[in-house]
Image (cartoon, rainbow, N blue to C red; front, side, top):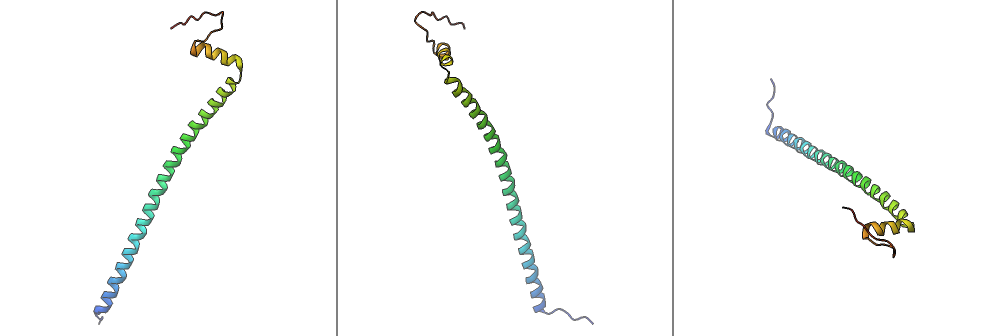
Length: 96
């Protein structure tokens, strides 16, 4: 005949089961939160890479403009077109 489990053995099995379930729940929660953080970091990386590309393009454009502004002829032509400056013997005719 099989012996019936004593109250002490039942309590021990319940405690062990509770600990296993609690530990499993903690591990699942921990892994899930880490996974969510990894996804957020990847999203942030893509966003920052896009911003970096835009800023690098803007930097290249500004460097090109700086190079152009070092040329006195370009500066004179730019001032004439943008700010309607003229030489003493020139007449400005602006077409819309």
